[in-house]
Image 1 (cartoon, helix red, strand yellow):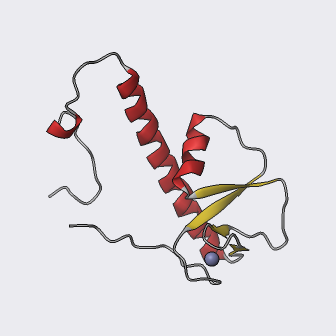
Image 2 (spheres, rainbow, N blue to C red; image 1 turned 90 degrees about the vertical axis):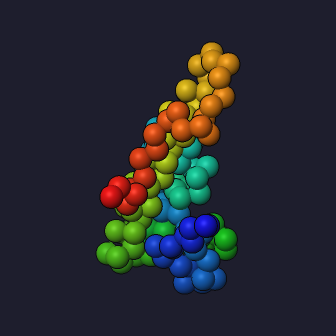
Length: 119
Ligand SMILES: [Zn+2]
């Protein structure tokens, strides 16, 4: 029952779906940001501003692309997904760091809220 990943966008150079959005400018390098980087959905573009601005980055072939409005929207989507994933992971990790001897994560102690699973 593996859910196939539906890629938002494919790299125009190598057709990979390992695409991240590029965040430009100074970024507060906190735990949430690091989680977002680790997720592979976001990468930091630093202060180099290209003209036109490249919104997307391929993790497979390491190329920047995406200068149009659609790419900007895709980048926003990837960013939001990365941020919510990062927050979920941080929350889980904090819960794991709590001194608890019970490991009943898989017994349904937590109620995951997945979009689209509600009747
Ligand atoms: Zn590529």
